Length: 137
Image 1 (cartoon, helix red, strand yellow):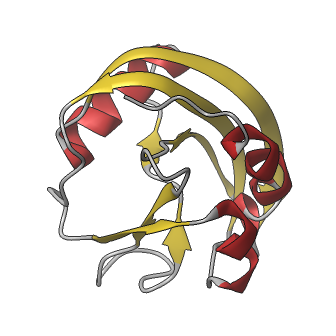
Image 2: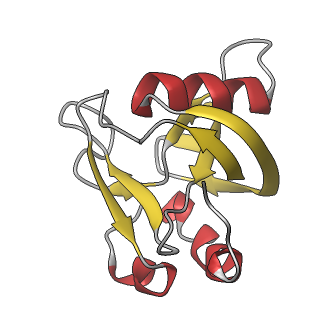
Image 3: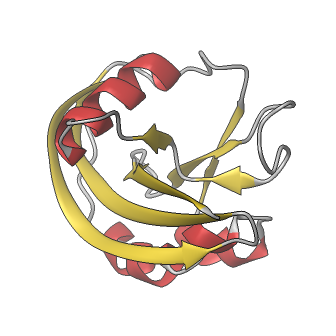
């Protein structure tokens, strides 16, 4: 029986309009692949609360304003993932790799060339539109 996982992911943009992606650390499922920062929802936790907690734990960033962009489902051979993408409109702090992951900023039009997890790939088209006129802090 497959494990069902609920996950939140963040789209954080820098002043140049690039979006942040994180590489899954060694020892984790699909290690070495790239994804949008975020993580699993805890029992009884709202998506926004999970987003705030995950970005504080993984990146040292405090989310001040965010809006939900889209939710999708993806089936891997061993697990089913429900993934919700949030656009961080305003945050405090510079993203830092606090969870052993590598981070990099990528122009949205270049995301398709990165080794991004299959579950995250549908977000790429949505983010191309988000980068236009973005006003990151």
